[in-house]
Amino acid sequence: MSATNVQFTVAAHIMAALGFRHGEETPSAMLAESINADPTFVRKSLSKLSKAGLIVTTRGKDGASKLTRSPKHITLLDIYRASAAPPRHHRRWQSNWPAQRAQSALHGSAIRPIHRW
Image: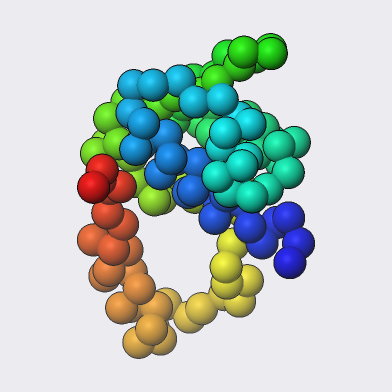
């Protein structure tokens, strides 16, 4: 699986881990181990999440990350947009197609915040 196919998945996992530890700084090495991913790839994802204002990071040997706001106020759409993942559907739909009308009607209500268990 290519790196572009997992960007959103990795970003969502990072945000879930940071949400679980809300308020605590979490080192990128710990996140990489949790995801079982290359630390360099995790740091690239952290950079994107930071640029989007979802997390704050500190660099260096003791670098770590934490959420900028409550997990209750972060949606999957926020994470998706921050991850810069490629669009899932490349085909343009006709606005009069039933599937397009249904997707348009559900768009706002289908995205839910991530909540801490």
